[in-house]
Length: 496
Image 1 (spheres, one colour):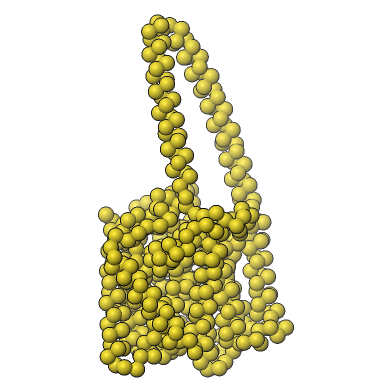
Image 2: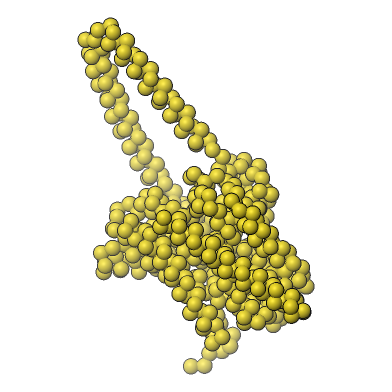
């Protein structure tokens, strides 16, 4: 059967076929990702594989790697719209087929295979993320295969890129979809071709359905690839407005028909349980008061005084414990939002931006901190943790310098500005408005590819062979350092 060059099947096959030049890199990266996922599977195998009636509580209470959520484990184990439907409108529906596969595996094996099913999704997404970013370096920016391979390994050495390939969250899926969109956009820009309506709508559904704010990046691709043609009525309606309306409608329907009834039922159950508990406590208190009155009546005056003293000590100890608990709960985990209404409650207007950039955005995202290693800011980890060593800040400064120089080197490239617009959108959301600023490093996979892509432009611009060799050597050393540093700390956290 002949397949037309512009057919959907041909495009799909060309995107996901491993090219001959990529086979060695693909094999190595696949082995690496399988090994990384195996670290997490081995850590939680005994806890998460037994069959259970309450998967949500099991996964949420037992899984602890930074602030990542194991919601995907729960959804694949016992399907429901477990994600926040306004932030991840279609993600639960994307996980329905993996849920069915897991049900078959549970029936066949007698254990919950969610850790394996989710690991397969993570490995697939990470594998193609590595191929797409390699192709961006090689085919869009135009650096050599050696440089493209070097930058690919460098990129996956970033701490929260590496972690995104391991943890059961949505970030590695989002990363794959965003890199796919950038790769396709870059190829179209270089060939002076346009995104079709169906391509734009499909990329939006997949990307925004996984993480709503990333859907805006597809609009940026539309703008940079198609120009102002996107405002023509037909394109504007079918490629932009209609997909957005469908996605938002799916989110509303999920909330109204799945989330809200479930939450109301859970709230009613909690209220009933609380009332029953309070009734038991009141009965116990009445019984205790009666027993105490009988006991006190039989005591001598001296014994009564001793009892009162002991009671005062217990009250004092209870008050001290209550004060300590109150102080712990008041520990600052995020700044003051714009308001407490709906989405505004996720903003942060008071947290230090310079410190967030140094320690979290460009710090923890790339190099893990040794102190409070992979702790959750909603748990015991402070919002800001400083490195113990000065060389960590030197590494951060060098990578930041490469980013700035790379942006300058690629300043005449429309594709470089498209990539930067992806980063700028996240910077405005997370740093300017403070959405998720307290743990901004967790969102790294959504934007941090801007660094190696900018570095690719910098490598391409270097005309003097000696200068180019120095930079390549520096990138190789930094990449090796990041892999050793981050993998060592991850293994230390998981197993020691």
